[in-house]
Image (cartoon, rainbow, N blue to C red):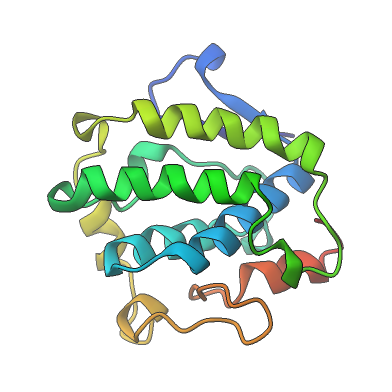
Length: 176
């Protein structure tokens, strides 16, 4: 079963993208690796940790997300949206991939990254899901990496989520 990504939960199927499990692993790893190198502000780091939490190893079955459900801050939205476009561009240029033992299939990953780039460019503040950011923070424990200074994996330099290093998880699963 493919993983489904969209801008909003209400998006019709023709506006969504369906990605295989291996493609999803590679997508999230590429975004987390690039974003971990580019993030400067806490808001930017939070966006990357949120992506890292979407590790397929969390459970079985469907994974995907809506861009509107990311922890966007209305106060820094234009800068954070521009940051996410830069993250996608850097992932397309294979930034951070040098830490991987196996290289993702760039020919398959680039069109997926292109889909995300177009959606981030067009995404507007009014598209943000109400309370998504607050709900995400409310679900965190006190020792969550977002609350403890954004630690990074020593091997991949990727921001850790409460699940650990998404890239390490992906490599243990044998997919890139």
